[in-house]
Image 1 (tube, rainbow, N blue to C red):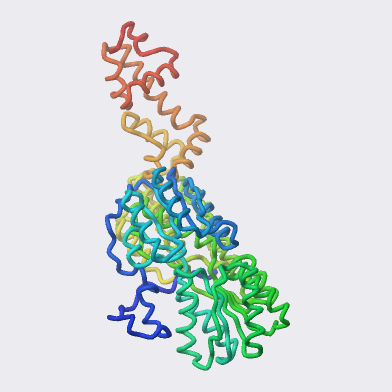
Image 2 (tube, rainbow, N blue to C red; image 1 turned 90 degrees about the horizontal axis):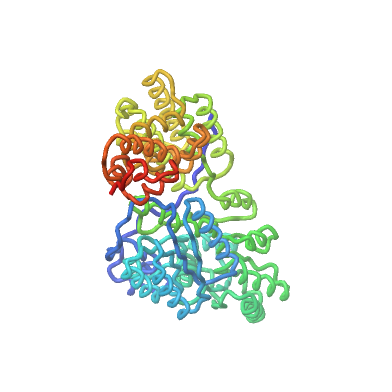
Length: 562
């Protein structure tokens, strides 16, 4: 029996209707905060640049965010860097250190250097709008991330990615109420005032507890700049001031601020106080293991950093990107740490080039082994991000379709044509069914390719035959990549291994041999010969001709070919 594949999905796919006048509701009513919680939903975009539809490889991103060295943002940077490397993107990261003047200067500097895209984490919910507008007016695509800008700011960015802070803190509030038995006094350590996280991590808690645990009492809340020393002093004062009335503390940060909370409660002899926090950094997970934290939000900093890069990749590939892409919502408790650590490792790196090669070469045993191993990896207790699995499935099916087209197999004969294939993909009932269906399509393509050619021709030979038939046309490994369903780098590697020559060397030699024949038999201008054999740049043709033959075109004719 196939192992069941578990997906780690996001919760929200739509927003509720907006109250006509949110401001008339009290602050303890979640409707009061609608415009902050659902900023970005249904906002009309303003003059966004069109996607070049040429893929992410070789692109350059500048990321600007507020804090270097904080454990969460360190993980965020790592997630960005890993995802950028995966897609061949050059990434530069700049930090404003919560200084609005530095932030504005970094934005201007980034605009001046003309990157392909900017990832921007606004320090302030309102002030970030002007900077997003500035980037938009400069014609540079921007993805906002991590901290929410106000609704107007969403008009100027391709998308916003980050944690569903409101949803997460309602969830952590429910766990907190459960731990305290629905009664008693508590305090809040707030996030930086003015940021979206400040509003969400305070008012999501207060509105949720007012609804589900009206007997719980907010004793005090304080913004401590998330500093260990300031937080420690604040909590020591709370312990002395409120005594036994203080039964729990909710923190907007599970690392440096939480360290200050733990130090203060240890000094005050109040280890009985229940603590929950926003996470999940390595420091927060350590506190969870030790028992000084009862629960944290399953907010992976690495995935938070990866999401804006994924949006950029989708956009460069010409896909529609949703206006808001949340991190998954969940909690981590002591007994769930190992599962969460698996999720933080990121999604597995699957070699689809190898699969495409095996299908094209009719390697039935290799295809069987690939899908068997894939099912084991996906089903072996490692939850997979829902949006990643969806994208992976689409990419795998696209590769199979490319192989069918390159072998001149009618996709209609396989499963109802290109649109029919994708319709069937989206109709699969579970991830396990999806994987089994994809394996069936792979076998169909493999069988059809073998039947059409009576025997599968090795990939290197098919590449050489294709070049021999199309060498006069514009050719590149990138072009062949789309046709053969494999990456350009992989095709270049296979061609070199199976023919002993690089793609460029083989193509150039094939063209130059024809150019020699033309020049030796006809009196024709060298620039016309260049065009005839596939070179649009005459100077480049001269250089290649000289490199391959050791002569110039004019020497072969005995006169200037111009």
